[in-house]
Amino acid sequence: MSRTLTRTSVHTPPPAPEPRGLARVGATARLKLGEIFRSESRVFYLILGVTTLLVVFGLVMVLSASTVTSHLDGEGFTGRFGKQLIFALIGIPLMLMMSRAPLGFWKKWGRLALWITAGVQLLVFVPGIGIEAGGNRNWINLFGYNAQPSEAIKLSLAIFLGIALPVSISRFGQTHRALMPLLAGVALMVLVFLGGDLGTIFILLLVSFGAVLFAGIRLRLLVIPLMIVSATVAIMAFFSSSRVTRIINFYSLVCTDDSVNDCWQPMHGMWALARGGLFGVGFGNSKLKWAWLPAADNDYIFAIIGEELGLIGCLVLLALLVVLAFGLVRVIREATDPMIRITTGAILFWFCGQAFLNIAVVLGLVPVLGLPIPFVSSGGTALLTALMATGVVLSFARHNNKTSQG
Image 1 (cartoon, rainbow, N blue to C red):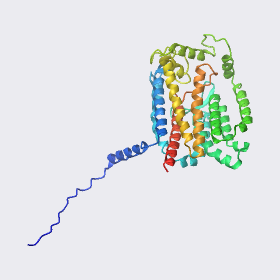
Image 2 (cartoon, rainbow, N blue to C red; image 1 turned 90 degrees about the vertical axis):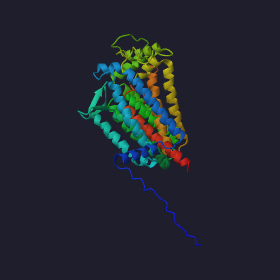
Image 3 (cartoon, rainbow, N blue to C red; image 1 turned 90 degrees about the horizontal axis):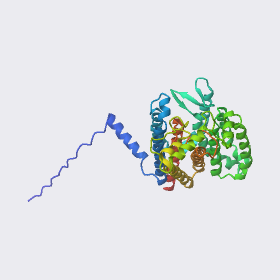
Image 4 (spheres, rainbow, N blue to C red; image 1 turned 180 degrees about the horizontal axis):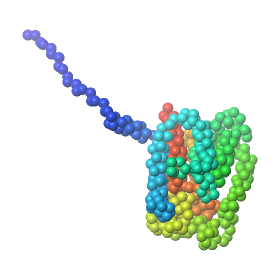
């Protein structure tokens, strides 16, 4: 009896067809989005999360604080909020895209970015493009939108110093010649000063000081430059009659309830905080925003937060800023490259210093400077630039995480 061997055929289904057209584009988009949110370090998600919360908090408060002013300007009750929302919807995806850039990208293009932002700043002096408001000429009008180029200078200077200072220190050691890259910052401050924006100059000084501090340069080398800068800023302040008046009123003991008095704004800012008490009067119920408090959605948004959300709301905002600062410090501590440490330190001084000065103005601790709270105050250019700076820091956090994993 013979045994017959038979071959059993196995049916293999045909391969699934590749997606085409919109289906293929959608699959690619989902893949790229998944790559952006793939497993990162805890500090990456910490900075991303708290930044998103600050943006949402700011949008909600801008919606409340700007309704009256926006309506009086003919933009409808939600006009300014709509513009802020557009910049947020542009800035957050841009932040995520920038977070994917490798460290070499910033080292390659950082110097060029400084030249580009300096060139754009010069546009404020071009007739028909530059705009003057409140005695300052630091805005340009492009495609119907007003932009402030000096905001972008803060970021480009932080990146440039992160590139240039390590090279300079390696070449000249702990000498005054190692501070030569700061001359670029001085040149940018001159451009900003020509437009009359003294507040931004203070932030550029903080950016420069933060970069030098985290570059490891001995502080004794900064004594003479700081004396020169302080004297220069004081002289610049007295070039403007409005600044002189604000300084005199700040140190004056008498402040009257007069609509033409120069202490009108700080006085009503204090009233807003006092009216809010511990728990506030409720979201949307501010009375000072009814044309009593100028710049309620921008320079004095902290006063509206205090009035509507009370001390509790102010403490929540401060807690978010502290957590953001903690995340930036973590990036600095985990840095394996001096550029990461220097640039992140400069951005840390920018964010924290600007927020502190804004709140100090509202509390009456310093004269009015015209500085917004990062991520919170209205101002499309300021929000967009702050989100871009966060994207740079997130890319540094990715680099640290990749390096630590080998």
